[in-house]
Every structure is written in structure tokens, then in C-alpha cells.
Length: 347
Image (cartoon, rainbow, N blue to C red; front, side):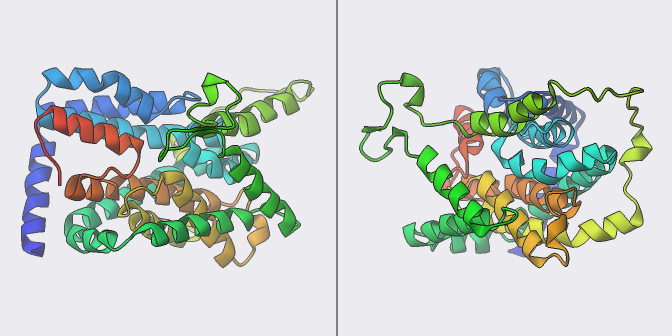
């Protein structure tokens, strides 16, 4: 079984490095990066707009382009979260907590470098796990029913409640407010609208991206709009500024590993979104840190762990999508639709 998986991995690698496929992959990554930086946009919007283009494409370049958009938008979203305190995608909201303070400390290049290394490490591990361990992970995913999914959601809520600084009551209040904001919308089981008050924009619920932009982006703008602090000189960032030191690499390595493990585990489970994965990875690393009070003030671990979890999950998301025909998140649902358009039946 493992030998067949390795042979399939080698064959797939040979197909992916063909010049035409490399060009389409590069186009997808570049589009994903550009879209990922834009607030309110993301892989879901980009793939939705480019999905009709795949009708006239060969299946392999089409899937490579869509996957490139998906993965490129992950790093693009981290750029906005670190440099501008704008979580362009919900999973990157937790990256703002330590990424933007690092920018204020003049360590934006280091934060982006750690993000790049975390994404590469987590994606490499995720691909290997996806190919070699997919039969085992699929068997585990089959055993997850409503009680297990509820337990995972409860774990995410508890992780969020422990992330606040100061009184634990603030963390509990934050979780309760989040639950209240999730009430408006349309019930997926009955189709009945809840607390929409006749406002059609609330039929799909309160958008998490809009909340994140308001809490981080708009709040930061209002805080600094009347500030008299003016930069005396333009900030220049060189490529070597993104190269972390050995001490910073050692500091970030174990958070990368833990975040990768969390993302790999949650990626194999259908229906678990990327947002809960990044928050749980952040909460675990904060709990295990020797100085947890550093988190929220520019800790590299607070960037490495959630970004590794996000990127490993995007790789392993292909396991339930390809093996079971069950998409792990909305982006995977669009990629599943692209596969069906090309006549490929997953599952």
C-alpha cells in the first residue's frame, strides 16, 4: 500500500513539473497572492470567478491552477494580517494578534519569513501525510459523527475563551458574544430564518470577514486617524530582512511542528473549517509556552503555529474531498465542483 502511494506521488510529481502545468500553477499562486491581500476577498471569491474558465481547460492544469489560487491566498492573507492588521480571511484573524505587533517592533520581515517557512514546512508534511496516510485518516474520519464534531467545536470555544489577557471572564464573554452573532441567519435543517428582522443581508448570517475587518482593520484606522506620529523616512524591506536568525528558527520550530500536527488532524475531518484549526493551534502553543504573557505582544510562536496549522490543513483537506467526496470547507466544495465539471468523480 505504501509502495503504491509512493509510486503515485512520484508519478504525480512528474506530471506537475511539466512546463505547461508549472505555468498554470504559477499563475494560480500569483492570482491567489494578489487576491489574498485584498480585504474581504479570498480564495473562495477568486475560484468562483475563475471556475467557468476550467470548462475549456485540460483537467490537470485546471486543478493545479485552482489549487495554486487556494494555497497562494493563504500566504496573501497572512501578509495583510501581519503588515496592516487586516485579517483578509477569517483564519488569519489570530495571526493579527502577534503578527501586527511584530510589525510595530520593526520585525515585519522576520514575521513574513517565519510565515513563509511555516507554510512550506506544513505544506510539505501535509502532502506527505495526504499521500501516505490517507487510508488511515479516512478510516478515522468515518468514525467521527455528530458527538465527535460537537466535541471539536466545544474545544474550539474553550480555546477561544482561554486566549484573552487578564480576567477569564472576558474570554467567556467574548465566546458568548460570538455565539450570539452566529444566531442570525437561515437554519440549514429547516430553512427557517432566525433573527433576520426582515433584513435580506442577514439571510446568510453575519459574515465573519466583516466582523474581523471591523474589529481589527477599522478599529486600527480609527485609533490612528488623528495620530500625529509620522514616519520620518520610508520603511525599506530587503529580501535578507525576511531571513530569520538561528535563534528565531529554534524558537519557531516546535510551534511549526505542533501547528502542522493540529492542521493535519483537523484537515482529515470533513466539515471542520480552517478558522477553528488556527485558533486551537494558537491556544495550544500559548498554553505550552514558558512565558505565555508574550503572546499578543509580538511572539513569533503566535505566528508560526497558526500559519502552519492553516497550510497543513489546506493540504490534508484533499483527503476527505478526494477519498469520500465530502469537501472539508467551501473552497474544497468549489474544487470538487471543478472535478465534476472535468468528468472526475471523487470518492
